[in-house]
Image: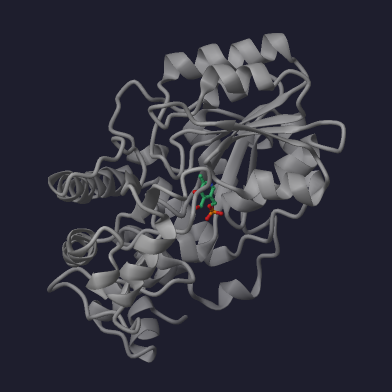
Length: 390
Ligand SMILES: Cc1ncc(COP(=O)(O)O)c(C=O)c1O
């Protein structure tokens, strides 16, 4: 059997290489980042990539160890569902639900696509927000389902009343809590009121609560909606391993809902085929809540630093419960993005209807953000267009 140490030696990786591996996994398809002193510099053309909401720190050490320990000839076996049984059981145990309440996929994005296809159609609209995470909207358009887009409110939070109202007769409502890109969140009491209201006024409408970022919230009144998904037909919660768990490159997500609901989702569209290494990493990460605590604290430290840096330049962003901030820079996102890119910092895409004023900036490592803030200062103070900074 190939030992973990042997495996990494074969790859030419020492213990520093092990750390780098963690950073690569957290980046998904994007390149890796580094923390001063701990890491080698990224081979990324010198770019700081804070344009996708990946996790620059990657997974915890125990998760990396679980990956190494899983590499053995046993990977020659394990077609799904054999290789995901333990993962599903671990998730079910954490939430106190039966295994038939859980589905897993290669990223929660696959489940968002499948859910939209399962419950929306040309006669059954999708209700979503503007701006919010785009997969349900894109999936609805692909199948010709009408989309009811509800603009966020003045504080950039999801307009919970307007969304509940729009849900009447809809196939599904997509509610991202915390919301990407605005970083805003609704607490448990508000969510319960909203979900029960929709169930009463439009009982056939399915309710998808996307909690990809919930591990990052610093509001103690925010809680998972899983208890409501257990209790109420047609309500389901999706979670991602790509954010606080730092596993974007391993592709893993899951949903919890009543058996008929999750069955309808997995019958509608492929959720992908989760591999043995990813399943082992998912279990290890779920069993390491201390690492998630540390990750939340580090993200908060980076968030406070970055928000303060913008504030001192005169630009405001809502308090954020994700790993990104959405800043009112009073100029088109494209202009800011191009000026930053010329100085080797990649920031987020346009988020209509705020593309003329707001930019989304993912929170990287503290070291990356210190460097990025220097670039932001240069771009924002040199001229109102940023052009002179080039
Ligand atoms: C709100 C939200 N939901 C779902 C996803 C999809 O994540 P994944 O497919 O990596 O689990 C993302 C990715 O950025 C997201 O921001």
